[in-house]
Amino acid sequence: MTDAPAPAPTANDPDREPGADADPDVDPDVDPADDDALPYGVPGPPLEHTPFYMGLLGGLGIFAAYWLASRLFQVSSVLILVMVSLFLAAGLNPIVEYCERRGLRRPWALLVVIAGVLLALALFILAIVPVVTDQVKTITENAPGWLDQLTHNRQIRDLNDQYDIVTKAKDYIASGKLAQPVFGGALNVGLKVLSLLGNTFVVIVLTLYFLSALPRIKTSIYQLAPASRRDRVSKLGDQIVRGIGGYVSGAFIVALCAGISTLVFLAVIGMAEYAVALALVVAILDVIPMIGATLGAVIVCAIAFATDPKLGIISVIFYVAYQQFENYVLYPRVMSRSVEIPGALTVIAALIGAALLGVIGALLAIPTAAAMLLIVREVWVRRQDAR
Image 1 (cartoon, rainbow, N blue to C red):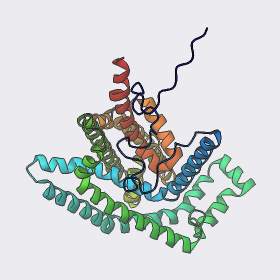
Image 2 (tube, one colour):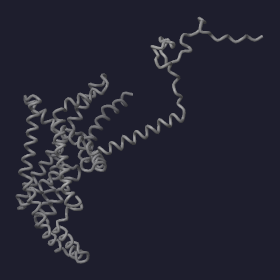
Image 3 (tube, rainbow, N blue to C red):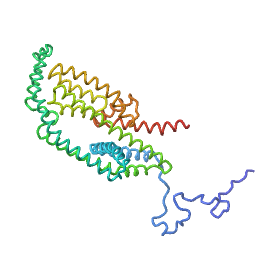
Image 4 (tube, rainbow, N blue to C red):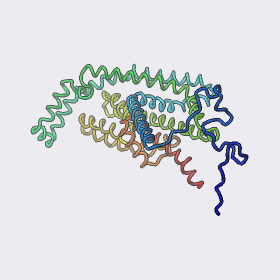
């Protein structure tokens, strides 16, 4: 004879586990019959995660990600201005800290740095822009003569006789249409200039704001980290900011040295009428990693060859020697305390940055790669070593 199954425990059974039939979404201390505690009724069971439910959530997630990416793409120009301003603020911050170490309080140090930046910009506009304008005009006027000198070469003369290259180039320069393919006409030239001036003004204002608020910005970002890790995050963040500031200020110093050396060299060899304009071109291009200094040297040497072959040979010798000095003496000394990044990674970062954001991306890529390398070394590698 088999044993009968044991009856299920009832609500009044002492062996029944408390809360066995209770709804997990309902507070056990609340009486379901109490209308005041549950004014909208007893919650039902949770929804089942059916394939349709999961697919709906996945589709909504993809749609939300696409919408967010499209919105970010629309404001990408503004984000680039913000990033450039942050990098410039980090580059000026070492000067502020230097003034603080000399006894100035931060508000006074900020006032000194901001006044110096605005004064330098004003002097640059008043003193350099008219000279550069005149020298660019002189270069444009002399360009047809330089093209005529190219025809003294037999191969170039044969090509010109066959394809009329030099004549077309001279007519193109003389027509004043040199800027139209870039800007698209006189109206667009004005719009581009206004846009450039507006972006420059925005970058200057944001840079000065970020510079004055940099300690508060860093503190606010560090507070997003857990309290147990906040000290380490703040130390890593401060090191990243110091590295970015050192790189930006170091790149400015290297470019300034290149521009001044070009100015002095051209004045010595008798090309003073183009010296300021070409020195400015060399200084601006020298900021671009890897290829900037070479591009500037090529432009100067080409104009020197067109003026006089002897001056061209002297220019090539000068820039070959200066490149060695800059690459092996000046650059390592200036950048030794800013970024620590292998040479191969520098090239890769600059290429990726240039592909993503052009010249600005190439400028921002190296300190960004150095910051990522620091995080990998101090966080991921140490975690792997501790296993």
